[in-house]
Length: 555
Image 1 (cartoon, rainbow, N blue to C red):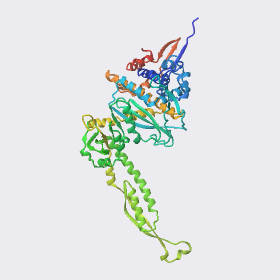
Image 2 (image 1 turned 180 degrees about the vertical axis):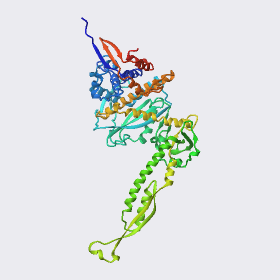
Image 3 (image 1 turned 60 degrees about the vertical axis):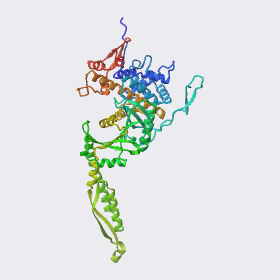
Image 4 (image 1 turned 120 degrees about the vertical axis):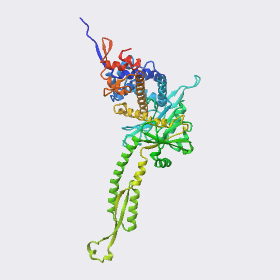
């Protein structure tokens, strides 16, 4: 008699690509080296981190306490390691790994892994971009670790091990919400990315009420002290203040000048578009000024963007229209008021006119009116009657104020302490500031509803910080894979079809992930094979490293 077939089917999908990138950068070994590995552990710390990254980049929104159930449908041993079963990846094991990461120093671990990957992939770090964003949460958050939590090895064998305090956790609290959810508590993520491929180099969680203006310069200075990278540091206007500029004297920096600097607004309003020089970048023009703000010699580039000018002009029109509605309501209310004297009425009319930003009051008239007595006194002498004063006026647009603001439309000021144009040209200043979108794209990725951030449910600040580093590692793996894929396509002059079926040499890795849905690992009588590897999928896999192809049994 023929023996019955033993068939096992497990999902693989795009996670083979993710696992291959994790393997290529040696992430599992690095985590195990940092945290150590107990010989009796069924799942090493590195494998636990790898499993969490696979979960995060699975785009399924699975919480950690449902992790075994999530991994049960996937080829767990195939993706993570021999002998690793879904039930081993329970919330207790993953939680302990998060605690270990927290105690060892999250930002240091992340930067160590990122710099090793950057070196392997040859990422250009000549310019780095800093930005921050908020992530909101639900519930109460209390510290979950003891004050003295771990031992650190002594510098020499003859010295005793030292007890060391656990790092101070962040404060999950209310603050300025970039997500427009001021009703929810939040924490802040600071991110430093390369302009080459949007690769995250530094990630740090901070308290929800942290101010960028007070911390950005300190973040950059500390980063530069710990990392020997002579890069141009780029940030938004939160970096620009007299205190920050003096703190960053040893750094090369570029940022936008906020209009709260009085001289900046004065310069913008005084620049005529006819005086601007056309940039090599289409749609941009500029003029150069020198500045010694805060005693720091610097170069100011007043830039006008045609695209931004159109958008600013439309927004200005909307603001003027809304201001007219509000002004009309205030004028109607004022005209219905009764004033005791002519002086009070005139003062109120002038006060309202001064308050209006885009309008003014014209043809102001103040009328004296009689208040007839009521009841028994209605036949009294007219000399005993009381008087009151009312205002009438017309609402007119303040064309001078609107034109003045319209002149500043589309313009902004970039400042740098690199005076020599041969080191940083005017055009490169614009390019580097435009590349600030690398951080914005990173935050957009982290805040995607299908990503792990949709399940920030952990109830201690320490584990939230640790989970934020896992999110950063997901972003690192994603951006490295996307950058490598695009680089190989460009080098080989090859293309892949995009969502519209048109060839492109710059596909997103997310689209590639979607192309690999429905791939399974079949184990028939202990023999493994891959199902649904179409010609298109085989064509795509050749542009990924062998570590990725191995998971699809092609190596």
